Amino acid sequence: MEIRRHLWWIAVLWAGFTLSQEGPFLQRLNEAIQDGGSAYARDLQQDADQALCSRYRDRLPPEAVEPFLQRQRSLIRYPAGGRLLGDWKQGEALFTNPRKGNCYACHTGDPKEKGAGRMGPGLVAYGQRGTSEAVVRFTYEKVYNAWAFQPCSLMYRAGVHGILSPEETAHIVAFLLDPASPVNANARR
Amino acid sequence: MSRLWRFVAAGLALLALGVGVFAQDQPEPSPAEEAKKQRQQLLEQGGGILPSDLYVAQGEELFKAVRGPKGVSLEGCDFGRGAGQVEGVVAQLPRYFPDTGRVEDLDSRIRSCMIGLQGFKPEEVKRSEVIAIAFYLASLSHEATVDVRLATPQEKRMYALGEELFWVRAGPRDMGCATCHVTYRGKRSGVLPLSDVVGEKVAAHWPAYRYSNDSALTMEDRIRTCYSNLGMPAPDYYSDAVIALGLWLAVQSNGAKMDLPGFIR
Image (cartoon, rainbow over all chains, first blue to last red; front, side, top):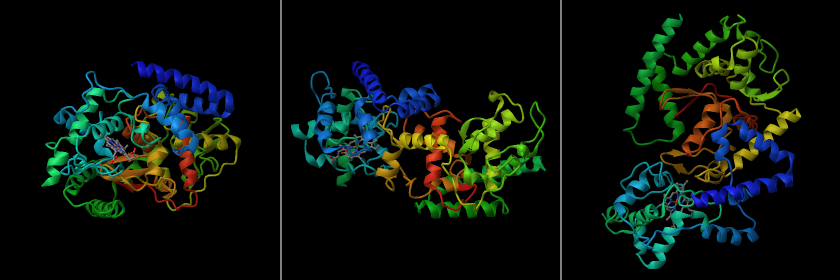
């Protein structure tokens, strides 16, 4: 919630900044967005880094990359107690649920899932990487905030936007890494 | 006549559902082949009539009927080539209309005439009627060449807005049209491939009949569906936001021969 309020202020400041910079066009854009209805307008409020991705059409200039990654890293939150590996069964439900992770829209996972998308890299047998501290940490942070590793990735920042809580993110990490999870168990057969 | 059409429509709708369910058990061919096959099947089962033909027939009836508080038909509506001219108009929309002072697409123009010409109140304009009338007009633009010009400052402004909206990343899923339809075009989202909406000149086959769920959609419906698929609120019908995106897409489709009403999964 606090992050949200934070983002909101960034958005307001950013809007003010860009408006004063480029004037009439952005004003018209804003009018068109308002005209699209209040829910639409609310969702099209951008934070500063969404605005950067839009402006540079998903390809940031090199000098903008490092500050972008740093800002995104600073948005990552961790579960109380610091356990980044949760319960894979709960993770499976979250991974599948279109209103939560919705990961199958873009990734394979359990090889038995037929409707999996192919926009992201396949995640079948992801657990082959082991469960070292580095692997667990990377997986957690990637799922929580994909943009902390790849600016403007198609993969959305589920944790940053509150779609997945830190605990839920840890469950998904377990779904990917636990040898008993179908992602890994079904891949061996 | 109209009652007969309705009866046939209901029968075909049921058939379409049956075909849809049946199709799911087969291995997936390419979407284009699949659509061709489905179209052939529906044609055979309908005795040469497609479900989209029924929307066209219903739209023609609505278009020619004397209706509304002012008791006139829509035959006097100006779709950009002058009042009463209906051939090929869909290929040249959206465009600027001085009488409403707006850039309008097909949906919006139908609605404007229902309000301005026939005297309906805005809240009386039924979406289902706008769609049927859009299908009728589409059938009169089949094989016309998409030719949407940016002749007025208003059109140029809307085009710039559409382009901007197309590239916006926003919302809780960090989504934007271009990220999928340009950067990731051709990749599969779930079972469906993402179309390359710039290169494939997609506006040439809208409005379209969607056989997978037996529905009739215009470009506005389709754009709004994209937003919903991303878990984002869609822009309102007839809003500048949805018209601007439609205008931008239509211009990317210039030069394509229209295939109307479209027939898609």
